[in-house]
Length: 316
Image (cartoon, rainbow, N blue to C red):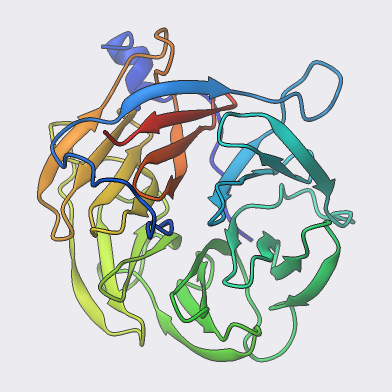
């Protein structure tokens, strides 16, 4: 079962006294300036329980029209917002039954516009009205143990990061198992951390980050290892505890960091470009930035797990 991060404030904030998936860009009016930090636009939250208590935002995705999907792992909901934060609708997923695990832990938009979501060892496909259309991954030889991340390539193939089995599973657009491979660099003869986040790049590769990891690991879509980059630390261009990874249509990579809360931007080969690292007490600031979604190279949406907010930034 996937290990869930606590939404408490990172230790580095206490010690320092607070010294932070690739969208369709066919109609994007212009490319962002690569070395200019994203500009804060707005933030919003939503009372998912209806009793004055915020839920647990675990994942975010966007479709090609700009609808924002947010997964509330403690209210067992998927919420739909406009790009300006207006609540359009929501639906409850199936009951978690005897499981106390939060879900959905990850969501993605399939090529046909249906919504994919992770529930324990199962991948669920939802229609636009919230009806469950399909499920797989919980039985058979290719059973998922701890799915944590989702990605969809341009051909519609679906990738699942399993951080208990330390593998990446690949399925067809219809959900048929195609292949799997061991994920993460071996350390001392074994893989210490499991894969958690996935993002498909424009050059047809798959980026992966590990739970509590500090490196970006790249694979071909057939599972061949293509290398990795990332240096541990809190300096510019260094990574300490990756929250999420996203890629724009140029191939530039956006990475959030829990331990030193910020959003950093790199080239496809890991060259540092810029960052956004406002303090928590500033509007638009980070406490625990996590997963992200990019819309047409114009905007990036970041979940802050601790503040229970969605933050919107312009990519200039």
